[in-house]
Amino acid sequence: MALVTTTEMFKKAYAGGYAIGAFNVNNMEIVQAITEAAGELNSPIILQVSAGARKYANHTYLVKLVEAALIENPNIPIALHLDHGADFEICKSCIDGGFTSVMIDGSKYAFQDNIELTKKVVEYAHAHGVVVEAELGKLAGIEDDVKVSAEDSSYTQPDEVEEFVTKTGVDSLAIAIGTSHGAYKFKPGTKPQLRFDILHEIEKRIPEFPIVLHGASSVPQEYVKIINENGGHLKDAIGVPEDQLREAARSAVCKINIDSDLRLGLTAGVREVLFKDPSIFDPRDYLKVGRANVKAVVAHKIRDVLGSEGKA
Ligand code: G3H
Ligand code: 13P
Ligand code: ZN
Image (cartoon, rainbow, N blue to C red; front, side, top):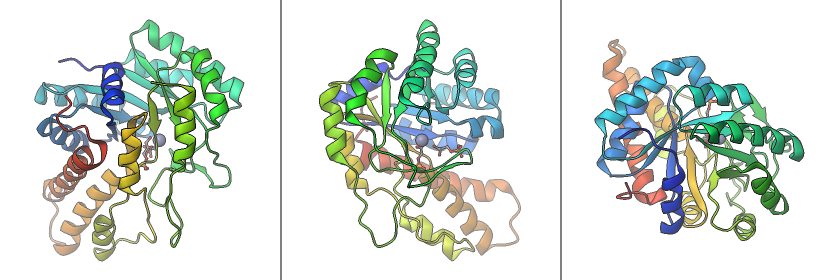
């Protein structure tokens, strides 16, 4: 099977009340872990690549790793997606370079400018058989070293979504309802709560349209503990409660983005091995433990959070 777009995946996910996991890939171990988990659970999957990942691992290496995963897992639909494309050029480069889906993230621009930019990407992408995700509203947190403070973040305004979707022709829409990027999403002592009222209002304005949730890591405390017990220092790392993500997956949310949880799993495995046995210096000895953790995280998400097990 070749790489697919997300069109069919989202249609089925919307109708079936589940979501597709979009996991960030940066190296071979992460690609293997995600696709092995998805393959074993017969789940469709989105592998997404950020600008930082392209800078780290190189576009061609990432595409070829994903193609290898496709050969190893021929029975599941896999989409290759650009995460947080900042401008037309990076989207074009990924469209020309084998991706089946791109995100143009114009959320930092004024509404009309976001529309113009998104529309330009949609025209190019659709002419090449590629689908497009855009964003309205602003998430707090860090991506590619750009930090958006909690004060500068803003929820998506339901009043804007219909005009945005109609004028741009975009295929899916990322919204801001209280999630944020990174491992420090909520203040300690506060109760994390996503704004389901905004989500439901948006659903009413654009029925049957696939919604995307970024910043959806749950920050597993078992990995935070392992990291901290093995020389790490992550203080007050708090994520989105998984029951709220499950609730979102049952609604119009068809794509849920997870990166930080994979980083935590990988780092916990590597730290545990190296801290316990300082004589180890074969990368395979620690990377295989990190990779197994990433696989366990993805399997858990597919089975217990996204609901996409058996939907391939
Ligand atoms: O949304 C951000 C993703 O976690 C990607 O992070 O830009 O550091 O690769 P990155
Ligand atoms: P997390 O930092 O919550 O994993 O979010 C990842 C993300 O939104 C990638 O686009
Ligand atoms: Zn994101």
